[in-house]
Amino acid sequence: MKKTFLTLSAATVLAAGFPMLVSAQNSAVTNAILNQRTGLLDKARADIDKAIVNEKTSGKAKTWYTRGEIYQGMIGNPIYGKQLQPGEGLQKAYESYAKTIELDTKTGEFGKQADAKLEGLYGVAFNDAVNSYNAKEYDKAIASYKMASQIKPQDTTAVLYSAYASEAKQDFAGAKASYSQLLGMNYKSASLYTRLLQIAKQQGDKEEAANVLQQALAAYPNNKAFMLEDLNVALASGRGDDALGKINKAIAADPANSNLYAVRGSMYDQQKKTDLALADYRKAVELDPNNFDAQFNLGVYNYNRAADSYTKASKMDLKTYQASGKKFEADGKKYFEASVPYFEKALQLQPEDRNTLVSLQKVYFRLGRTADSERLNAKLKTLSK
Image (cartoon, rainbow, N blue to C red; front, side):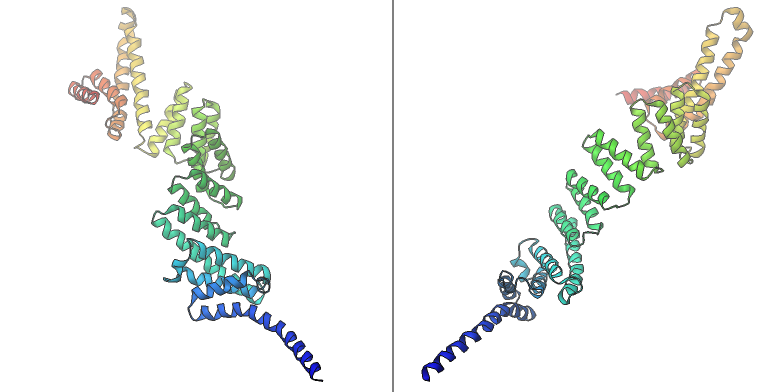
């Protein structure tokens, strides 16, 4: 009987040992929670790191949620925060909350709390990024912005600011990647295309610039800046007819833009369509009296008419000159006088423009305004030194 009692007692002890083992494993999570609540975050971290690799507790949402709270608590702590590697607290807190939601879903007891915690974690990451950017620590800023984007993948702000930080450190490839990511997120902004276009230009990639410009025009067909850029490309490539169509479209979209009329006037000048050019120059000056190109070109128009009249008079034989030469010279003088206010206004706008100085000096000379002619001639000599 005594032997039987001992056998039964041993069996009872063995049976009782199993629940005691499970309790020991759960105690790591319990101890972590207790240490966290009493502010002993280093001990809490040690406990939860053990629990996270234990097969009995690593699959529980409570374990991961507790881990997230501990690492998040360490981030801003003046003592325990120093025990973390740069970015470690954010990364591990995010991983922990994400794992909690994976195990418990967003509607579970811990999953619901983890989802709310991620919102706060996003703010921490974003603020860290802003502070790093302001301190010109661009690599840290980019890492934090990317962390914020990882926490909240649907958010475009962190991606956009990451692009700004990349540009600040002259990392154009990184900036381009972030801007392209925004396009993939259906982010709507004309400035995004403007930045991509500028990056392509800075990198000297004409093909990429052309592709970006066409994408920009497809997304914003009435954007004045993109239309003007497209016009400049057409002009630079010698596609005059194509350029004229583009500028007509640009004027229709922005009829009060003085520069557009001045540019089209120059195009008409190249095509020898003088009347159309003159009308555009006058419209440009009407819209903006300080439009240098339009003022100068109106001066040139009158100068050329004057020179043409004097040339015709000089080539006449005596009989023809006696009959109509004086009239041609009078017309020439009239056109020279008409050119003066345009050249003078152009010179006022750009006092050291050599072409304006030379043209106006010659007009003054032909009109007998000797003092004015000599004054401009002296200024030209000064500029030549």
